[in-house]
Image (tube, rainbow, N blue to C red; front, side, top):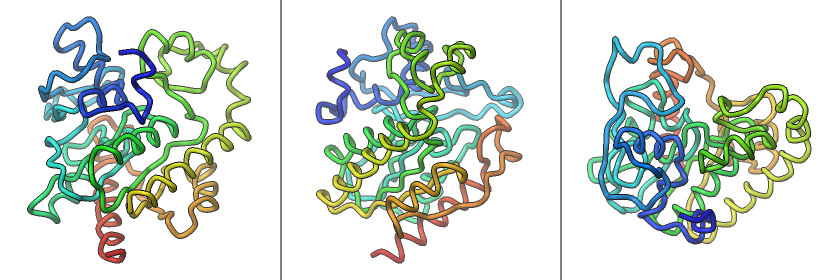
Length: 274
């Protein structure tokens, strides 16, 4: 794939998996392929861990992530109008066997709730994915959980990570030299990253209005991102409080109690906004 083909307006169902890089790289390694960023082969797969995301207790609690044919966690989408969730590893559900999207799906008996969580995803990645998905799948509601604003851009091709990764505050951070990061990334931590993020947030709001999607926002970053979001989206912002990793398999990401809280908030918003 050419990088031009990863632009939101050009993404198709067969290429949308290219916007979930760590999952694509995991599939490449499991299948001994040479290129992770190729159109989907239409095959789902399972894995105990994701590339660059080791989990401390994966060997003693070896359940597997189910990745659908499009390259995202959960069952294959059924394309019925439904809520959908977007975000980074918190939304994907790293470390938990049942993420919030799947808990929410238990409230429905006739449709799949798409989980568009992108591990290590940034503001740009997440909102570009929302824009692409809006063209491809009907949504009644969308819930976007943003990471911190300084995680502004994450390149989708692994070999770019070693190069562009030295210019932007990005993941996978294993590809970034700390000294380089210290010298060059500070300019992205405040004004510029916030300015660009606000443009993307406004873009998402416009897309939601055009497609009649009820769009709501939150973040796990209470220090920088939450105040910005509150100002940008007003009453479409919601807060969740339980960031507890004690009951997650990797002991680093929000565990099942946090996922249950998110699912309950999703459901309450849906009920109140019918």
